[in-house]
Length: 139
Image (cartoon, rainbow, N blue to C red; front, side, top):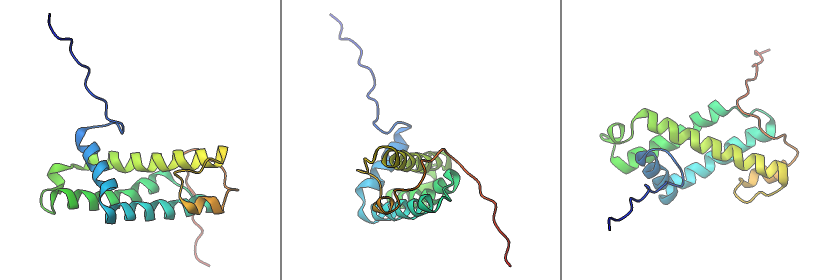
């Protein structure tokens, strides 16, 4: 009797295997993890101020992802091991995960994974997505 074919295992974070490896490396390396948490705190402060922009959040996380790619593959091989599209995907996923944590915390009060800065400003409004603000000129 032939063995039944197995379905391929789904990765809990989705995406390509390279993106999965990069996300796991970010969470496993302490200096990179601390940089990610620092970036989450900085973006959470923007949420409290009402200046959140999803595009800028992903751009901020891109610096953490670039650091992780260089740490994983070395400075000369990082761009081949993790092309720009994969790095952008990981940065967007990190920004979306932060947005989901913030929305859950603001909507229900369940602030388990949200940064501690968010608990200080529970009066912020839930995030709808990318938002642009007009900058004021110097006076």
